[in-house]
Length: 520
Image (spheres, rainbow, N blue to C red):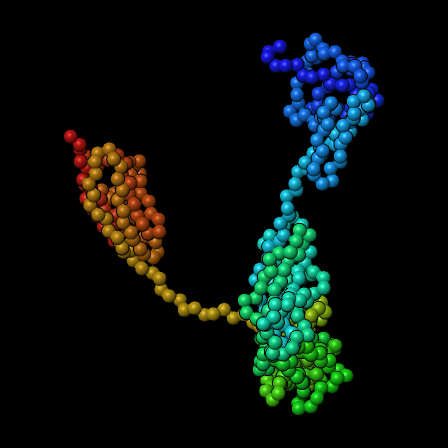
């Protein structure tokens, strides 16, 4: 021993008590020993072991062990609800020890889900005498849970009693608060609601005064309706014209100061616009319609001009006026029915008897007469004319009663008499020869030009001696230009060269000097 006294001997409990008191080993608890000591009578003191058994290493968190029974009485707990423990008397069997209660492991706390942020841009869109309309934008942060909707609460000015207007959350960002009294001042706030909670409310800075805002009536006529609105016969006319005014204005339509025929024209009015509808337009529906919007004596008017059109009728009284050479003249009169639209022109077509096909010769002819040219000799032609307006060509054409036959005219060719001109002319040099200087061994050329009729004969002379067939000289003439080539001249080839032109009417000559230098 190392100076410590041996522990006092403990009385062993009965075997049954030991079996009951032995708790199940926990994770990290000390393992059981191989053999338990034999029980001894309660009156005898057990002998002290010579060497106490080695204890296993204690776990990091050992479980609480129940207190072993001793000869001294255990202290009584003074806390409320604690059970009283009695110490067995000497000689009596020890009561069984109670198993220790298991210690619950602490559960990790879940992070709290944040509620959504407050709605944005809360504003009043419209105010009437007994309601007003709110608009806002969705919050920036929705949280982990999806947004269930919004709750709108109101409170009268001077009170702190907030009341929810809607029973269930809704997802729209626009809400109309009805059933209010004119003259009240109402505070409003809107909250976003989700499974994780309710957001901070978005509140208007100033209370809303419930009163009707008066606005003079004003018709906003669309730009394309400020001019004549044109439709074809049988088309539907569906026009919406917006207007403004508060309180809601009264709308009335008329045509020529008379109410509209409701059997043909349907009118539907809303708080902001009026709709003018005709299922199938007829020409009788054309005209100017007056729209009036008025509120308590104040009014605004606008005029809607509708024109229902259809294709025109054919021209009238088409006739052939004249046929001459390769040309035909036609005349006609405008159609009796212009289709409720201005006639823009006429289309003229021709057809020859051989092919029977119609070809257009004039488009958008604005006059009621025309001349058709470049017809083929020997053919017979028929003619027809269509009228045209904004809807297009007439359904039928006016056909000329007669035909035009282009006759073959007998003509005799007479050639034009041209006076004869005397073209005879003696030779005349228009470009003379020029003096030249050349070097021995380098070929050179002499040029001049001459005219005359008949074409003159060209003769070349050197020092007044005619140059005949000599390979050293090459003489040419082309379009009156005379040339003499002297091939590789030497000192002997220098001198005066003469070009003479001779024809039956006379002769002419020019000369020049040629010097040949000998290089040193």
